[in-house]
Amino acid sequence: MTKILIIEDDVFLGDALSQKLKNEGFEVALSRDGAEGLDKIKSFVPEMVLLDIILPNMNGYEILEAKQKDPEIAQIPVIIISNSGQPVEISRALALGVKDYLVKAQFDPEEVLLKVRAQLDKGETKGELEKFLGDKPASDNASWNLLGKKVLWVEDDKFLNDILTRKLAATKCTALHASEGEEALVLINKEMPDIIMLDVILSGMDGFEILRRIKSDPKTKNIPVILLSNLGQESDIQRGKDLGAEKFLVKATVTPNEILDEIRKIVSRK
Image (tube, rainbow, N blue to C red):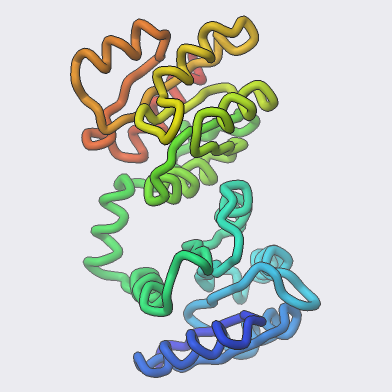
């Protein structure tokens, strides 16, 4: 019987997940304390850990760091379940080897079950997922290392954000994210990223206007910008080029790995 360890101090959520997984035939252990949870990983030796970040006595990041240093448990896959969905926190967790990241306000126990099965599945489902994300993980390709570079992406699609967060974490860059124009412009002036990925269709200010402002400001005009959009009309592509975009990528025609490859090529040229 497959063993799942839940480390979660929210009584209702912990009990709900535990019951859901037991009903599906898993052997489940539940810990509501971080330090106790780490000990439980070693004694229970689960095939999967569902881990909260904010915990008494030892937080989730500390558990992940300790787990990485212990070769007997380092390879046990972990799915984070957290109140926070900030890209910087997701990047930190993924850099510590987390396989997936769920935000508490945005899922139900059924989704957790699907995530668990996807990670445990060694067959067709996992293969199809890897194919969709881009056949080879960026972490396996040294040429995608962007250590020391700042990459900002401006995108309001949650699904694509999750994928790009995972991929960028593997390149060792500093990943920055904004979901709308004014936020993006503030972040650009504050952080001065090495490259910007910019969606065209955004709420409020669209990507073309953001690009125009970037290129009209002497401070930011030399930052390369990749436009990433569902739009593929020749007029849109030409408008992006006229405004100074380095590249125009149509979402439906590129994989996440191809997006990262374009980032690497442009950053290396600059």
